[in-house]
Length: 258
Image 1 (cartoon, rainbow, N blue to C red):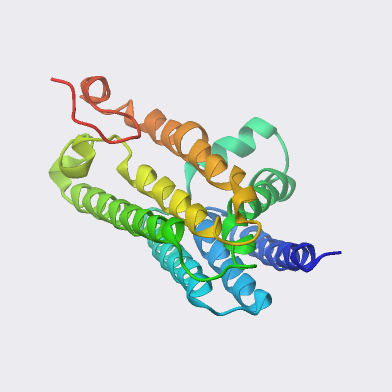
Image 2: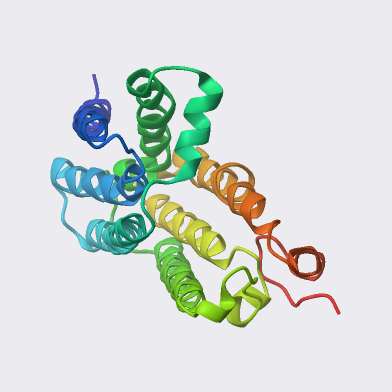
């Protein structure tokens, strides 16, 4: 078995152990909403493990690790704060009602096991990208710029949304100002930019080019599955959402229609 295959197998074992422990914690709490924060923090753990396993600590390796950790810590801490503030996420209650399984089995199969697989696939650039890199070239520079842009974009969008929701008079209203004037989901768009940037950095490693399914999968998750569709289903209940949706792009920012 090659060194990279062993490296991936070790990371899979570390990730599986973490998910198993968190599942046991969810059983005790009777709430698994906190697992959303592990989406980011878990990738941070995988990235750190990959950095040490590869044994190369050059500029390319540090850049890939540093940007991944910045994204992971910001997103993870934000989602922990949101969970503590809002309590259990009703999405998981509805999911368990649909699958008609016990809380233990339903959450194990449809929450923890599913996220384990998706997290591992999405994080391939920050795993494989640590192997066989020689400095930072044009793709690495472009990727770093795109990742920093995406991180700043999603951070500002999340901050604007939190600030908007903190005003009592805005309850039930649609945020259609600032970055949200140009995209109905600027935070998700920024998230996608981060992962395309990390992929570009990874392409300068020996096998990084073959991790293309990772940013494609992340973009699909954000734009077509767990990101935009989930939020849109809640937003449709707000007055003014139909007009907002008619004039504002769903994902990629652009000037609103008149």
